[in-house]
Image 1 (cartoon, rainbow, N blue to C red):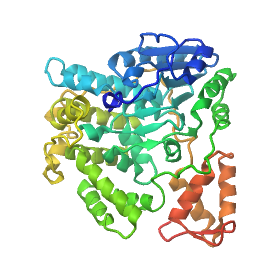
Image 2: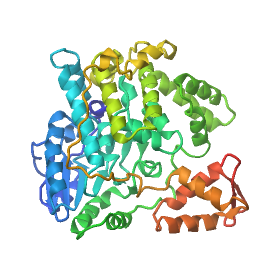
Image 3: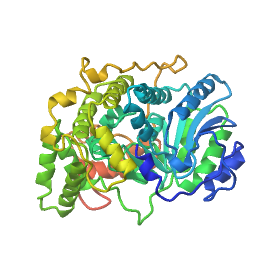
Image 4: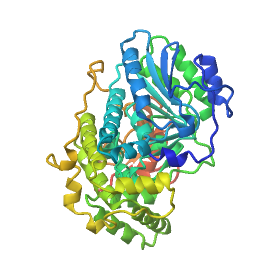
Amino acid sequence: MLATVLTRMSRNGVSAALARTSAVAAHMSTSAQATPLEQPVLFESNGATRTYVLNRASKLNALNGDMLKLMRPQLEQWSRSDLCKIIVGTGIGRAFCAGGDVATVLQHSLHDDTRSKAIEFFKDEFEMDYILSALPKPYVTILDGITMGGGVGLAISAPFRVATEKSIFAMPETKIGYCPDVGASFFLSRIDGEIGTYLALTSETLAGREVFELGFATHFVSSRTVPNLLARLSDLEDPTFAMIDRTIEEHHAKRLSDEPVGKLTGRTRQALDMAFRHDTVEEIVEDLTKLASTSDDSVAKWASETLEILYMRSPTSLKVALEAIRRGKNMTLLEALQMEMGIATAYCSGASTDFTAGITAVLVEKTKGRPVWSPDQLNNVSDAIVRRFYERDSIYLSAMPTLTPPDFLSNGKQNPMKFALPSEDAILQIVKSKARQDPISLSDLLAHFDSLHSGKQGVAEKVVEVVKRSCDVIGNQGSEMVNCKEQL
């Protein structure tokens, strides 16, 4: 939701047009060729595809209420149309969507006569996120740029989420004294290990290929091939999910020989899972403090940097966010969104002054230091303060609306992980079953996963990373054997 801050970064505009050929040219352009239409969301029809194009490039496509109100009836029309075979989401310029227009929300929340507008924005946004999770048509999102906060909400439930080398992914809410929303308590709690907890609390970013490798995207392509991919999708006749998957897979960009590995791998990932497994922020900080003194320099550096990051975040937001992630693990998406509706309502209703302090410091004044949080230390954030955001009888939740999804949605939810890389748990379960009695060769294990996932690109790399971090691997390169560790 840091869209306003991000707008000070340099921009390369691209032109928008309704014809497919113009849209393809616009995607590849680095300077405006024509005056974009004023409408903040554009709608295109190209063969099999119907595309919404977020069109606020100067604001990094930050979501506002007008955009949400434009999108909902159009999505309903497409959902009911026999001519619409695939729904695609894209954005003009350097971002898919950098978040919600939270500065406007804050201004509305500060006054009794406009507070309902702030709450209405969150209701419209969360209902849109749910609608996109249950569309009756295949849904493809192109994350070719900044995708944060509210932008993640638009994209994360799509069965096809396409990242590129330009993708920048984050849930940055604790930076501004708020809490990850748009379904974050649902999807972050289901990502491998404790990566979701780490991202929720730290607001750290993922970039490029790691957005794909950690499961937030289902595919990875080069940015320059996106226009051709969109053209190919629009040419499909009666496309099935499998056809769409194969079409995107054909555009996969393989890892270059000098391309660095993701930062959340190996020993750093082991340390992350250990530290962020706890149910209290104090215990997380305690473990990170111990890790900062470990003899492993890379882990110690990561732990020290993470402690510094957490110190900059709102103590109240850290505790509210951790509670949301733990509760969301056992909720449906709609239940998680309703819980987050309560959290948003509480923030808008004054449950924490950090919402005002954070947005003012980060987005308005653009200060570099730590905002003036209250309470300003973790140990002063009592359980009673956290309960303001969750208890049914909390006075801060009295204005919470009930989310009401429309009736045009599919009864069967689209599985957002069906076309992603296999989860770590799935990999380890297969390793356990294959190597229960005797070690299995790594080559046989990779052949099994290649067959299981129809040759999907990236599977072998993930299997190797998980196995080498979580299993016993012995032997020379090319003849490695994999054995289960006791905890498997």
